[in-house]
Length: 422
Image (tube, rainbow, N blue to C red; front, side, top):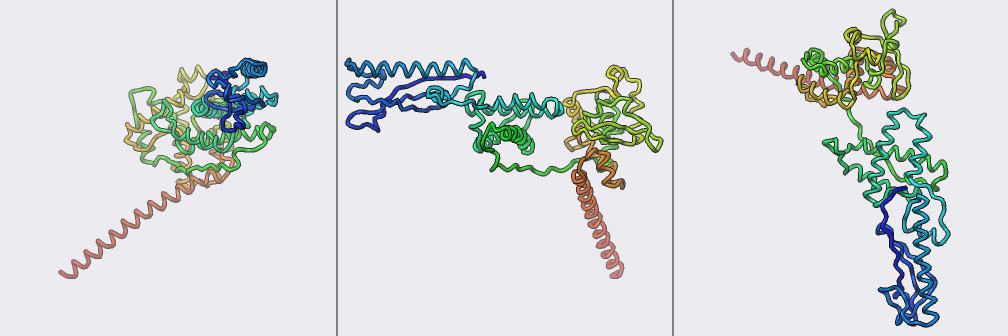
């Protein structure tokens, strides 16, 4: 375990506890400004004690034995430090004290847990999920380095204060590749991953208490943003001279008419396009995120895009239906598309999936149970979020209509009064 360590030992006489001018001796161990003291079970006469040199100044037999004992204590503490360092153990003032006293135990550290978690679950968790865990683990390391001036801590030292400190660190942290700080729900996701790892440690009895017992996650409900028919049409009609813009536009439109996420679209091949029970073309695949099978009848706009890229050279090289780009670049290009189309919304690729659920299906009368199947949701409650969005839009539209009709009614009433008075 690599860590930058400052280590020192100070032998001192505790004057506050002196009796008859004799004070007990202590060894103070300091590691990275963290201190602990050990009672040495020896006393010295303060009249012959040199606090600067940490030694007895007179030359009798008792003084020589005391000074020799002090030298042995310092040597043994330094040896404890070297042993921990050589064993790759975490070096703290408490660890050195316990090694010196012979009371140290085999404590697992947070890095031990991270290594065990990643090794054990690497074949069970999806690679994207594992990537998210590694991101959270990276933030944990940054927090520990900043807060504790070390690279690791023992699991036994995890407590509620650590969790709150990590939360505060995340809320204040601004990634170098982002313009804004980490959002609330993303902070909660990072803490949720830490919680799952700590729960694993608790079940394996690496820790005797769960530090998350008093912690409560606070998620903020976010609206499902989607495109209106007019906004979707403006993107469909966009004709750019830039090839990458046209490709991103086509992939986005394909997602709007199928509900398939970008990570799943880029893996689609001709093997995923099958003849369905109705004789039409269907996409049959599994959601990468959940492993849930989905079967989606291909609507005409999506079918036209498949035909458009049928003989594309880049798609031919990868053996996929469409050429691919990195997800990060995709969202950057979508912002360009939004500007070109005059769309003020924060256009992201996931918005296409929301648009499929709302503008394409639910708004056009497709039952919510069917939409849930098409999206590959494992719970109907997840899909019902979109239904509430549609209800809100209906309510807003009807309120606009009510206002319009009310204004017309007032206008007609005034016109009738005007006619009768004339």
